Every structure is written in structure tokens, then in C-alpha cells.
Length: 254
Image (cartoon, rainbow, N blue to C red; front, side, top):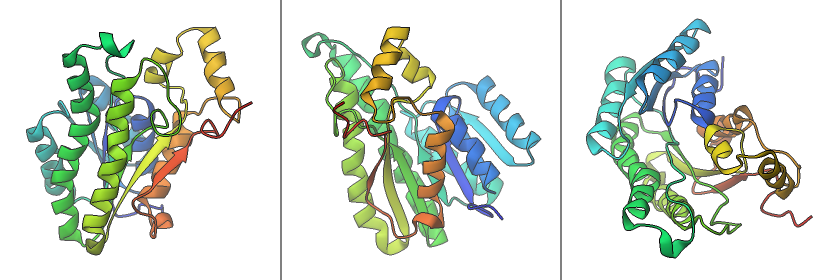
């Protein structure tokens, strides 16, 4: 029996990177998985891979900024698998980067909508489904950027992702009595398409690796294991936390 046996889990931003690795990890641990992202072809490929490994998954493509999509994902979990126990709200964007005075308002607003408002919309519809079950676990993907480390040119990303920590704490306090745990995961540098967009030269990769105490970046699968922990009963008394899984980037000065 896996750590998530008989449970129903949802993953947004599931088409690549940490989201994709986590969807596979959830299925491996026994969960039936609803996978969400903008790209249908990548989601279909993910569902096929999970099914080839003996798991169960269903995909629905859409825009996480759209409340109707958040509602539809929960509806799909309930109609296809009977309910919802775990949600990994992972979809995000680097958004507009560069000197803050040059960041357009539209870029700022898109970052907030994708990284923060989408998480609010997701939780808004996930929580009532979990209340019906009498328990649940929600995990948001935040970041160390803007929490323990400041980087120039990343104001929109830092602010929108940091907002998830406040949302985590509020929801954890509001729904703990219903058996619902809410936590934020703060990965360090990870070898994903988004990570490669920041570290896009060998020199940049070496620089990012050197920022970490472990002197390397994470694999998506390493981060996924921490999501499984937060989602599962192994973390049954953990709620309202900002869990750093950052290879020591927050404490490293060497």
C-alpha cells in the first residue's frame, strides 16, 4: 500500500517539471490523479505514462486564472473518482523580469493572477470538496525567492509567490478544525524548464548551483518526494508551514 492509497489527488502545472514529477509520484503512491495545465498534448502523454505504470489519471486542460476551470477540475475529481483528498496547486510563472521601474503593470498583474490568484481560486473550490470528506491536504508551490533571499529583477515573481505563504497560514487556521491541512513548499533551484529559463548558460547554471550549500540543483523528483510527504499522513500534524526544500540556499554564505 502506498502513502496515498485510495486517495484522490489533483496537480496543477502538471505538464512539466515539478508538477509532472509529482503527479507520477502521487500515482505511484496509490492516488488517483487529476492533472491540469494549459497544454492538452503534454497532459495526455502524462496520463498515458501513469496508466502504463498501473495508475489511474484523468486530464483537463485550461487556464488556472479562470475560476470556471478551478470549479471544473474539482467537479472532474468528484465525478470520475468520487471526491478530492489532496491538491498540489503548483502552476506558476516567472512573469515579467527586469528592473522594477520597467516592469509593465500588465506583467505584474499577470504574475499575481497566475501565481497567487489562481491558488486562491483553486483552494476556494477544493476546500468544500475536502470538507465533505472530513479531511484533506493542500500544498502550494512558493519559493525561497522573496522569502529568505532577494534577487534583483524578480519583484513580481517574489511578491506573488510570497503571497502564497500568507494564504497558506490563513487557510490552515480557518479550516484546521475540518481536518484540512495547508502547507507551502519552497523549492530551491530545480532542473526544470522554468529553472532553465533563469539559468540559461553554463555560467549561470554554475552560479545557481554555487548558491546552494549542496552545490547542486534539485531534480524534480526530489522535490516531488517532499510534496508526497506534505500530502500524506506522514505529515499529519504539519499545517500552516513554509517548508524549505532548498538545498541550503537560504543559509549558505560560502
